[in-house]
Length: 268
Image (cartoon, rainbow, N blue to C red; front, side, top):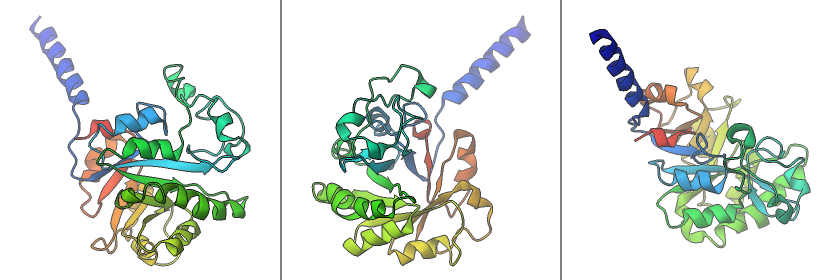
């Protein structure tokens, strides 16, 4: 009987430990919002991310057929919505008819969620104290797209109506040429290159400094490389995407400034 009570108490203790938030000293990016618990890149995921201690929210953007800036990771609709085909082939009004509830992961629980526009997320973010990382997706099969998304559309869409948020916004991308184009337009706006592999020349920090940027974001697989951290006194290094089981590990990396996670609600 005593043994059964002990086992029961141990199970309860372990269960409560799993519910406790992990302590972090790093700066946290809510990756696609609070996407571990809500459909990624939706307004509900961003609303819930605002309740966490994440300093940054992160999202991905594409252009619709009528040149509206919409928030979604994939260019193809099929993974996270009930639509089919490419974002670029639909107008915003047509895209708004689809559910962005990510039924493959969440069933019908969030079926009323729609594909948000970047302006809708900025409106949500404005009264908060959070910052926003805007990842610009490039299209390798359409070079002209990369030109269209930078100047008259993305940059003016964000900075014209929301110039007062300039110090809380950053444009990030795997496509360095897109970031270079933004830098030509504005010498002060914050930029962040993203890397899935080490650059051919120089360090990660060197690439950020070349863009006159003080942040760089890179895949956690690069943590295994000996020279991933250089010039951390000049550039803040963020890693993506960290799972709860890895929280304790990344906390031990002194040169790491912060990290992106889908589970910002599990940190304090």
